Image (cartoon, rainbow, N blue to C red; front, side):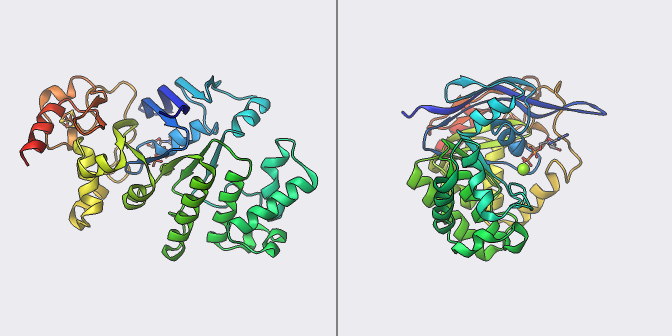
Length: 327
Ligand SMILES: Nc1ncnc2c1ncn2[C@@H]1O[C@H](COP(=O)(O)OP(=O)(O)O)[C@@H](O)[C@H]1O
Ligand code: SF4
Ligand SMILES: [Mg+2]
């Protein structure tokens, strides 16, 4: 089994609100292994971006441990610590403008991660030129500024910037959601090629389940700050155990428009739910769960092994497994 690049232990991120502390990430335990593609899915507001940003050092956690490359990370980084961490972890954002300085040429932007590692001059420039070509852009694009490129081209640069300094983990947060459908597949293919070529671990956050099924070795399903199901992608997609995973898959993969509408209407934001208060107890899915029983709201469920090599956090896992076997 490959070593873990990132280990999250009881990771929490709480935001102050008028009603109390909102738990955007609430007690996540997760390992990201060397070279794997871990998909992270869940509806809007479930805490996926917050988790990615904490791992990338862009958001301080409230509690718990973040271990990168075997080293415990501080909650707040000094410049030096951030620099050291970012040699291991890089991020590709949904908004391709976010990682690019509008006043820097593309070639300079590409070299920036190298400069911060002390690689400068012709070596950095040559490497940037190589990466420009590797992500499918002509050398002339190097002299341009971010606003002169299309969204797809900018995202290619964002990807080159993430990979150029050879990090161990690249976090992609909805990397194609803002792009034209016609270029989404090209960008996904590019990410897959680079991931394979460099054996870089990838945390791939997306609401498009088909893309996650295509790319990810393992998949984690997040619901209101917690991981409710985790496991090898084929097993999880073919035999979801958690009622929330089952509902998410039914809505997206079967093209069941009605179910999709129900989910949209029930998403945290659409239904007026916010991230749960840090003091809430019991299963968070209980108000929407067709299998819920009174005991579900008494105690929080925890991840337990299923019969199909996944883990699911549901008090009624044993009943669900029996139902699946009967089918
Ligand atoms: N900086 C912030 N301040 C207050 N609340 C936040 C902040 N960032 C995220 N949240 C809240 O945390 C929850 C999780 O958000 P997010 O991580 O963006 O979810 P996702 O990426 O799954 O859509 C949401 O309820 C969101 O409103
Ligand atoms: S613990 Fe209960 S409410 Fe939660 S998912 Fe399982 S059956 Fe549903
Ligand atoms: Mg997000």
